Length: 451
Image (cartoon, rainbow, N blue to C red; front, side, top):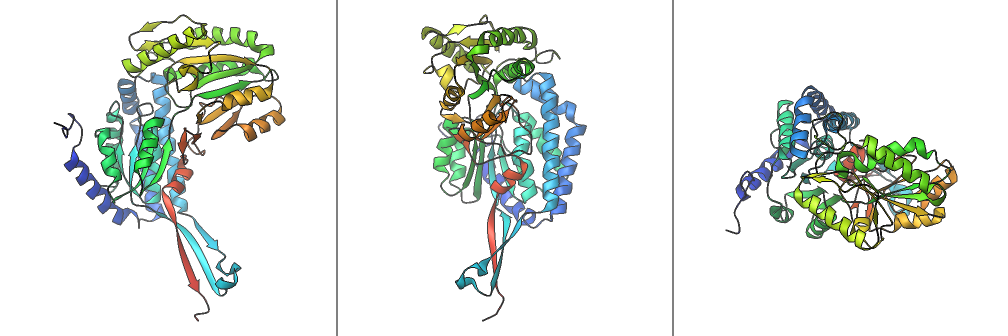
Protein backbone atom coordinates (compact mmCIF):
# COMPACT_ATOMS: atom_id res chain seq x y z
CA UNK A 1 0.00 0.00 0.00
CA UNK A 2 1.62 3.25 -1.14
CA UNK A 3 0.46 5.35 1.83
CA UNK A 4 1.41 2.84 4.51
CA UNK A 5 3.10 4.26 7.61
CA UNK A 6 6.25 2.44 8.80
CA UNK A 7 5.99 0.97 12.29
CA UNK A 8 6.72 3.57 14.94
CA UNK A 9 6.36 6.51 12.56
CA UNK A 10 3.65 9.14 12.65
CA UNK A 11 1.12 9.05 9.83
CA UNK A 12 -0.84 11.84 8.13
CA UNK A 13 -3.36 12.24 10.95
CA UNK A 14 -0.68 12.53 13.65
CA UNK A 15 1.28 15.01 11.55
CA UNK A 16 -1.82 17.14 10.99
CA UNK A 17 -2.60 17.15 14.73
CA UNK A 18 1.00 18.15 15.42
CA UNK A 19 0.67 21.07 13.01
CA UNK A 20 -2.57 22.15 14.68
CA UNK A 21 -0.91 21.98 18.10
CA UNK A 22 2.13 23.96 16.96
CA UNK A 23 -0.05 26.58 15.27
CA UNK A 24 -2.22 26.94 18.39
CA UNK A 25 0.83 27.22 20.66
CA UNK A 26 2.22 30.02 18.50
CA UNK A 27 -0.56 32.34 19.68
CA UNK A 28 1.02 32.11 23.15
CA UNK A 29 4.71 31.80 22.39
CA UNK A 30 4.85 34.80 20.05
CA UNK A 31 3.78 37.19 22.83
CA UNK A 32 5.78 35.63 25.67
CA UNK A 33 8.22 37.99 27.34
CA UNK A 34 11.92 37.49 26.73
CA UNK A 35 12.40 36.78 30.42
CA UNK A 36 9.81 33.98 30.27
CA UNK A 37 11.55 32.40 27.28
CA UNK A 38 14.91 32.78 28.99
CA UNK A 39 13.76 31.13 32.21
CA UNK A 40 12.39 28.13 30.28
CA UNK A 41 15.65 27.73 28.40
CA UNK A 42 17.67 27.88 31.65
CA UNK A 43 15.49 25.18 33.19
CA UNK A 44 16.05 22.99 30.14
CA UNK A 45 19.83 23.51 30.29
CA UNK A 46 19.85 22.54 33.96
CA UNK A 47 17.68 19.46 33.37
CA UNK A 48 19.95 18.27 30.54
CA UNK A 49 22.82 18.53 33.00
CA UNK A 50 20.87 16.57 35.60
CA UNK A 51 20.05 13.83 33.09
CA UNK A 52 23.43 13.89 31.36
CA UNK A 53 24.10 10.19 31.94
CA UNK A 54 20.74 9.23 30.42
CA UNK A 55 21.37 11.31 27.32
CA UNK A 56 24.94 10.03 26.91
CA UNK A 57 23.81 6.42 27.20
CA UNK A 58 21.17 6.96 24.50
CA UNK A 59 23.69 8.61 22.17
CA UNK A 60 26.04 5.64 22.51
CA UNK A 61 23.23 3.10 22.09
CA UNK A 62 21.58 4.75 19.08
CA UNK A 63 24.44 6.41 17.22
CA UNK A 64 27.41 4.25 18.25
CA UNK A 65 29.27 7.39 19.32
CA UNK A 66 32.22 6.72 21.67
CA UNK A 67 31.14 7.41 25.23
CA UNK A 68 33.61 10.23 25.85
CA UNK A 69 32.34 12.04 22.75
CA UNK A 70 28.74 11.34 23.76
CA UNK A 71 29.31 13.01 27.11
CA UNK A 72 30.88 15.98 25.36
CA UNK A 73 27.84 16.28 23.09
CA UNK A 74 25.53 16.41 26.10
CA UNK A 75 27.55 19.23 27.63
CA UNK A 76 27.49 21.08 24.32
CA UNK A 77 23.71 20.79 24.18
CA UNK A 78 23.49 22.17 27.70
CA UNK A 79 25.63 25.11 26.56
CA UNK A 80 23.42 25.64 23.51
CA UNK A 81 20.34 26.09 25.69
CA UNK A 82 22.22 28.30 28.16
CA UNK A 83 23.41 30.59 25.37
CA UNK A 84 19.88 30.77 24.00
CA UNK A 85 18.67 31.75 27.46
CA UNK A 86 21.13 34.65 27.51
CA UNK A 87 20.01 35.79 24.07
CA UNK A 88 16.31 35.47 24.90
CA UNK A 89 16.79 37.68 27.94
CA UNK A 90 18.09 40.42 25.66
CA UNK A 91 14.94 40.27 23.54
CA UNK A 92 14.63 40.47 19.78
CA UNK A 93 16.47 43.26 18.04
CA UNK A 94 15.02 46.73 17.42
CA UNK A 95 16.81 49.04 15.01
CA UNK A 96 16.01 52.68 14.25
CA UNK A 97 15.36 53.37 10.58
CA UNK A 98 16.16 56.88 9.31
CA UNK A 99 12.95 57.33 7.33
CA UNK A 100 13.62 61.07 7.18
CA UNK A 101 16.97 60.53 5.42
CA UNK A 102 15.14 61.04 2.12
CA UNK A 103 12.93 64.01 1.17
CA UNK A 104 9.84 61.80 0.95
CA UNK A 105 10.36 60.69 4.55
CA UNK A 106 10.59 64.15 6.09
CA UNK A 107 8.77 64.32 9.41
CA UNK A 108 8.65 60.53 9.77
CA UNK A 109 10.53 58.16 12.08
CA UNK A 110 10.84 54.42 11.97
CA UNK A 111 11.87 51.38 13.97
CA UNK A 112 12.39 47.84 12.63
CA UNK A 113 11.92 44.86 14.92
CA UNK A 114 12.76 41.18 14.52
CA UNK A 115 9.57 39.12 14.89
CA UNK A 116 9.00 35.36 14.93
CA UNK A 117 7.74 33.48 11.89
CA UNK A 118 5.40 30.81 13.25
CA UNK A 119 5.68 27.05 12.83
CA UNK A 120 9.13 25.79 11.80
CA UNK A 121 9.92 22.32 10.49
CA UNK A 122 13.26 21.08 11.84
CA UNK A 123 14.89 18.03 10.25
CA UNK A 124 17.94 16.58 12.00
CA UNK A 125 20.52 13.82 11.26
CA UNK A 126 21.82 10.89 13.30
CA UNK A 127 25.35 12.02 14.05
CA UNK A 128 24.58 14.60 16.78
CA UNK A 129 21.18 13.33 17.91
CA UNK A 130 20.99 15.76 20.83
CA UNK A 131 23.04 18.86 20.04
CA UNK A 132 21.89 19.32 16.44
CA UNK A 133 18.31 19.09 17.69
CA UNK A 134 19.24 21.63 20.38
CA UNK A 135 20.62 23.99 17.74
CA UNK A 136 17.15 24.14 16.20
CA UNK A 137 14.97 23.96 19.30
CA UNK A 138 16.81 26.44 21.55
CA UNK A 139 16.78 29.42 19.11
CA UNK A 140 13.20 28.50 18.19
CA UNK A 141 12.13 28.93 21.81
CA UNK A 142 14.26 32.07 22.22
CA UNK A 143 12.48 33.74 19.30
CA UNK A 144 8.92 32.72 20.24
CA UNK A 145 8.40 30.32 17.34
CA UNK A 146 7.08 26.78 17.50
CA UNK A 147 8.60 23.72 15.86
CA UNK A 148 7.93 20.23 14.63
CA UNK A 149 11.17 18.27 14.90
CA UNK A 150 11.68 15.28 12.62
CA UNK A 151 14.64 13.42 14.14
CA UNK A 152 16.67 10.90 12.21
CA UNK A 153 14.89 7.53 12.11
CA UNK A 154 18.19 6.02 13.24
CA UNK A 155 18.34 8.08 16.46
CA UNK A 156 14.84 9.19 17.50
CA UNK A 157 14.95 8.35 21.21
CA UNK A 158 17.44 11.07 22.12
CA UNK A 159 15.18 13.73 20.61
CA UNK A 160 12.14 12.17 22.31
CA UNK A 161 13.94 12.33 25.66
CA UNK A 162 14.62 16.01 25.01
CA UNK A 163 10.88 16.38 24.39
CA UNK A 164 10.23 14.89 27.84
CA UNK A 165 12.67 17.36 29.36
CA UNK A 166 10.99 20.29 27.61
CA UNK A 167 7.57 19.23 28.89
CA UNK A 168 8.89 18.74 32.42
CA UNK A 169 10.45 22.21 32.33
CA UNK A 170 7.18 23.88 31.39
CA UNK A 171 7.33 24.33 27.63
CA UNK A 172 3.81 25.15 26.43
CA UNK A 173 2.06 22.14 24.84
CA UNK A 174 2.65 22.23 21.09
CA UNK A 175 5.61 24.60 21.17
CA UNK A 176 8.11 21.82 20.38
CA UNK A 177 6.67 18.62 18.93
CA UNK A 178 9.16 15.78 18.50
CA UNK A 179 7.63 13.59 15.81
CA UNK A 180 9.41 10.73 14.02
CA UNK A 181 7.89 10.25 10.57
CA UNK A 182 8.92 9.00 7.16
CA UNK A 183 11.03 11.36 5.06
CA UNK A 184 8.57 10.97 2.17
CA UNK A 185 6.09 13.06 4.15
CA UNK A 186 8.34 16.13 4.38
CA UNK A 187 7.28 17.36 0.93
CA UNK A 188 3.65 17.41 2.03
CA UNK A 189 4.54 19.53 5.05
CA UNK A 190 6.29 22.03 2.80
CA UNK A 191 3.05 22.44 0.87
CA UNK A 192 1.17 23.27 4.07
CA UNK A 193 0.71 27.04 4.58
CA UNK A 194 1.05 26.61 8.35
CA UNK A 195 4.77 25.80 7.95
CA UNK A 196 6.73 29.05 7.68
CA UNK A 197 10.32 27.78 7.67
CA UNK A 198 12.43 24.69 6.99
CA UNK A 199 15.60 24.19 9.03
CA UNK A 200 17.35 21.13 7.60
CA UNK A 201 20.61 19.39 8.53
CA UNK A 202 21.59 16.41 6.41
CA UNK A 203 22.84 15.38 3.00
CA UNK A 204 23.37 17.89 0.20
CA UNK A 205 21.24 16.11 -2.37
CA UNK A 206 18.20 15.88 -0.11
CA UNK A 207 18.66 19.37 1.27
CA UNK A 208 18.73 21.12 -2.10
CA UNK A 209 15.75 19.10 -3.31
CA UNK A 210 13.76 20.25 -0.27
CA UNK A 211 14.78 23.84 -0.91
CA UNK A 212 13.34 23.56 -4.41
CA UNK A 213 10.08 22.38 -2.89
CA UNK A 214 9.94 24.99 -0.11
CA UNK A 215 8.60 27.76 -2.34
CA UNK A 216 6.74 29.60 0.47
CA UNK A 217 9.11 29.05 3.39
CA UNK A 218 12.32 30.54 4.65
CA UNK A 219 15.03 27.88 4.47
CA UNK A 220 18.32 27.13 6.18
CA UNK A 221 20.41 24.17 5.06
CA UNK A 222 23.38 22.66 6.89
CA UNK A 223 24.75 20.08 4.48
CA UNK A 224 27.87 18.11 3.69
CA UNK A 225 31.55 18.88 3.30
CA UNK A 226 34.92 17.36 2.51
CA UNK A 227 37.03 19.63 4.66
CA UNK A 228 40.59 20.50 3.67
CA UNK A 229 43.50 21.40 5.93
CA UNK A 230 46.61 23.19 4.67
CA UNK A 231 49.85 22.57 6.59
CA UNK A 232 52.62 25.06 5.81
CA UNK A 233 56.29 24.35 6.52
CA UNK A 234 56.41 27.35 8.88
CA UNK A 235 53.70 25.88 11.12
CA UNK A 236 54.41 24.17 14.43
CA UNK A 237 52.95 21.11 12.77
CA UNK A 238 54.13 18.53 15.29
CA UNK A 239 52.14 20.31 17.99
CA UNK A 240 49.04 20.38 15.80
CA UNK A 241 49.29 16.86 14.32
CA UNK A 242 47.28 15.22 17.16
CA UNK A 243 44.38 17.59 16.42
CA UNK A 244 44.48 16.59 12.76
CA UNK A 245 44.31 12.90 13.68
CA UNK A 246 41.40 13.48 16.05
CA UNK A 247 39.66 15.69 13.51
CA UNK A 248 39.92 12.98 10.86
CA UNK A 249 38.97 9.89 12.85
CA UNK A 250 36.90 10.79 15.92
CA UNK A 251 33.45 9.20 15.75
CA UNK A 252 34.56 7.33 12.61
CA UNK A 253 34.71 10.62 10.68
CA UNK A 254 30.91 10.86 10.68
CA UNK A 255 30.68 14.63 10.85
CA UNK A 256 30.31 17.09 7.99
CA UNK A 257 33.41 19.01 9.17
CA UNK A 258 35.61 15.96 9.67
CA UNK A 259 39.17 16.42 8.37
CA UNK A 260 39.22 14.68 4.99
CA UNK A 261 41.93 16.24 2.79
CA UNK A 262 45.27 17.21 4.35
CA UNK A 263 47.46 19.31 2.04
CA UNK A 264 51.06 19.41 3.25
CA UNK A 265 53.91 21.57 1.96
CA UNK A 266 56.28 19.25 0.09
CA UNK A 267 59.34 20.17 2.16
CA UNK A 268 57.82 18.64 5.29
CA UNK A 269 55.56 16.06 3.63
CA UNK A 270 57.65 12.99 4.44
CA UNK A 271 58.19 13.89 8.08
CA UNK A 272 54.55 14.91 8.50
CA UNK A 273 53.31 11.66 6.97
CA UNK A 274 55.47 9.61 9.33
CA UNK A 275 54.22 11.54 12.37
CA UNK A 276 50.59 11.43 11.26
CA UNK A 277 50.72 7.66 10.76
CA UNK A 278 52.38 7.16 14.15
CA UNK A 279 49.71 9.21 15.90
CA UNK A 280 46.97 7.41 14.00
CA UNK A 281 48.26 4.06 15.21
CA UNK A 282 48.66 5.27 18.80
CA UNK A 283 45.77 7.69 19.29
CA UNK A 284 42.95 6.74 16.92
CA UNK A 285 41.83 3.68 18.87
CA UNK A 286 38.99 1.80 17.18
CA UNK A 287 36.64 -0.40 19.14
CA UNK A 288 33.65 -0.63 21.46
CA UNK A 289 32.02 2.81 21.90
CA UNK A 290 31.46 2.03 25.60
CA UNK A 291 35.22 1.72 26.11
CA UNK A 292 36.66 4.97 27.49
CA UNK A 293 39.73 4.58 25.26
CA UNK A 294 37.76 4.32 22.00
CA UNK A 295 37.98 7.21 19.54
CA UNK A 296 36.74 5.43 16.39
CA UNK A 297 33.47 3.62 16.98
CA UNK A 298 31.28 1.75 14.52
CA UNK A 299 29.83 3.43 11.45
CA UNK A 300 26.09 3.95 11.50
CA UNK A 301 25.19 1.20 9.03
CA UNK A 302 26.50 -1.42 6.62
CA UNK A 303 25.60 0.74 3.65
CA UNK A 304 28.06 3.42 4.78
CA UNK A 305 30.83 0.85 5.22
CA UNK A 306 30.19 -0.67 1.79
CA UNK A 307 30.11 2.74 0.10
CA UNK A 308 33.41 3.72 1.71
CA UNK A 309 35.13 0.47 0.75
CA UNK A 310 33.93 0.80 -2.85
CA UNK A 311 35.31 4.34 -3.03
CA UNK A 312 38.64 3.24 -1.58
CA UNK A 313 38.93 0.46 -4.17
CA UNK A 314 38.01 2.88 -6.97
CA UNK A 315 40.75 5.27 -5.83
CA UNK A 316 43.29 2.43 -5.67
CA UNK A 317 42.42 1.51 -9.25
CA UNK A 318 43.31 5.08 -10.19
CA UNK A 319 46.71 4.88 -8.48
CA UNK A 320 45.96 5.76 -4.85
CA UNK A 321 48.08 4.10 -2.18
CA UNK A 322 46.88 2.91 1.22
CA UNK A 323 49.24 3.87 4.04
CA UNK A 324 47.34 1.87 6.67
CA UNK A 325 46.03 -1.69 6.68
CA UNK A 326 42.42 -1.92 5.52
CA UNK A 327 40.70 -3.51 8.53
CA UNK A 328 36.94 -4.01 8.74
CA UNK A 329 35.08 -5.74 11.57
CA UNK A 330 31.38 -5.56 10.88
CA UNK A 331 30.48 -1.85 11.14
CA UNK A 332 33.91 -1.00 12.55
CA UNK A 333 36.21 0.43 9.89
CA UNK A 334 39.66 1.11 11.30
CA UNK A 335 41.31 4.44 10.34
CA UNK A 336 42.30 4.69 6.69
CA UNK A 337 45.10 6.99 5.49
CA UNK A 338 45.67 7.35 1.74
CA UNK A 339 47.98 9.27 -0.57
CA UNK A 340 48.31 9.77 -4.32
CA UNK A 341 44.52 9.86 -4.58
CA UNK A 342 43.27 11.13 -7.96
CA UNK A 343 41.24 14.30 -7.55
CA UNK A 344 38.61 12.75 -9.78
CA UNK A 345 38.03 9.91 -7.28
CA UNK A 346 34.79 9.95 -5.30
CA UNK A 347 36.68 9.50 -2.01
CA UNK A 348 38.42 12.81 -2.79
CA UNK A 349 35.54 14.79 -4.29
CA UNK A 350 32.59 13.69 -2.18
CA UNK A 351 31.97 13.69 1.53
CA UNK A 352 33.61 10.55 2.94
CA UNK A 353 31.63 10.53 6.21
CA UNK A 354 33.97 7.77 7.30
CA UNK A 355 37.36 7.40 9.05
CA UNK A 356 39.36 8.28 5.92
CA UNK A 357 42.11 10.89 5.60
CA UNK A 358 43.86 11.80 2.36
CA UNK A 359 47.41 13.20 2.39
CA UNK A 360 48.57 15.31 -0.54
CA UNK A 361 51.80 17.32 -1.01
CA UNK A 362 51.95 20.76 -2.62
CA UNK A 363 54.72 23.15 -3.63
CA UNK A 364 53.34 26.69 -3.30
CA UNK A 365 50.79 28.12 -0.87
CA UNK A 366 48.72 29.30 -3.83
CA UNK A 367 48.59 25.70 -5.06
CA UNK A 368 47.20 24.57 -1.71
CA UNK A 369 44.52 27.26 -1.73
CA UNK A 370 43.47 26.21 -5.22
CA UNK A 371 43.37 22.53 -4.22
CA UNK A 372 41.28 23.29 -1.12
CA UNK A 373 38.81 25.19 -3.30
CA UNK A 374 38.64 22.36 -5.83
CA UNK A 375 35.45 21.00 -4.31
CA UNK A 376 31.71 21.41 -4.68
CA UNK A 377 31.60 21.83 -0.91
CA UNK A 378 32.61 24.81 1.18
CA UNK A 379 31.88 24.38 4.88
CA UNK A 380 35.06 24.94 6.93
CA UNK A 381 38.81 24.72 6.27
CA UNK A 382 41.88 24.66 8.49
CA UNK A 383 45.15 26.50 7.77
CA UNK A 384 48.25 25.80 9.82
CA UNK A 385 50.85 28.54 9.58
CA UNK A 386 52.82 30.96 11.74
CA UNK A 387 52.56 33.68 9.09
CA UNK A 388 49.59 36.04 9.64
CA UNK A 389 49.85 37.23 6.02
CA UNK A 390 49.21 33.69 4.79
CA UNK A 391 46.37 33.30 7.27
CA UNK A 392 44.71 36.43 5.92
CA UNK A 393 45.32 35.34 2.34
CA UNK A 394 43.60 32.03 3.10
CA UNK A 395 40.67 33.85 4.68
CA UNK A 396 40.31 35.98 1.55
CA UNK A 397 40.75 33.14 -0.95
CA UNK A 398 39.04 30.07 0.47
CA UNK A 399 35.40 29.56 -0.58
CA UNK A 400 34.13 28.28 2.76
CA UNK A 401 31.90 29.42 5.57
CA UNK A 402 34.80 29.56 8.05
CA UNK A 403 38.60 29.49 7.95
CA UNK A 404 40.26 28.22 11.12
CA UNK A 405 43.90 29.15 11.67
CA UNK A 406 46.01 26.60 13.54
CA UNK A 407 42.83 24.68 14.24
CA UNK A 408 41.04 21.81 12.50
CA UNK A 409 37.79 22.44 10.62
CA UNK A 410 36.10 19.95 12.97
CA UNK A 411 36.16 22.74 15.58
CA UNK A 412 32.84 24.37 16.42
CA UNK A 413 31.43 26.36 19.31
CA UNK A 414 27.73 26.87 19.90
CA UNK A 415 27.81 30.66 19.52
CA UNK A 416 29.77 31.03 16.29
CA UNK A 417 28.07 31.56 12.91
CA UNK A 418 28.14 28.09 11.41
CA UNK A 419 27.29 27.17 7.85
CA UNK A 420 28.72 26.79 4.39
CA UNK A 421 28.72 27.96 0.80
CA UNK A 422 28.42 26.09 -2.50
CA UNK A 423 26.84 22.68 -1.87
CA UNK A 424 27.53 22.87 1.85
CA UNK A 425 24.49 24.90 2.69
CA UNK A 426 22.41 28.03 2.88
CA UNK A 427 22.03 30.32 5.88
CA UNK A 428 23.72 30.06 9.27
CA UNK A 429 23.28 28.33 12.59
CA UNK A 430 24.86 29.15 15.94
CA UNK A 431 22.38 30.43 18.52
CA UNK A 432 22.28 34.17 17.74
CA UNK A 433 22.59 33.60 14.00
CA UNK A 434 19.87 30.93 13.98
CA UNK A 435 17.64 33.40 15.83
CA UNK A 436 18.12 35.86 12.97
CA UNK A 437 17.23 33.15 10.46
CA UNK A 438 14.09 32.29 12.46
CA UNK A 439 12.79 35.85 12.52
CA UNK A 440 11.89 38.54 10.01
CA UNK A 441 11.85 42.33 10.02
CA UNK A 442 8.67 44.24 10.84
CA UNK A 443 8.65 48.01 10.39
CA UNK A 444 6.82 50.71 12.37
CA UNK A 445 6.67 54.14 10.69
CA UNK A 446 5.31 57.18 12.56
CA UNK A 447 4.24 60.42 10.92
CA UNK A 448 5.39 62.77 13.66
CA UNK A 449 4.00 65.90 12.03
CA UNK A 450 0.54 64.43 11.78
CA UNK A 451 -0.15 66.07 8.39
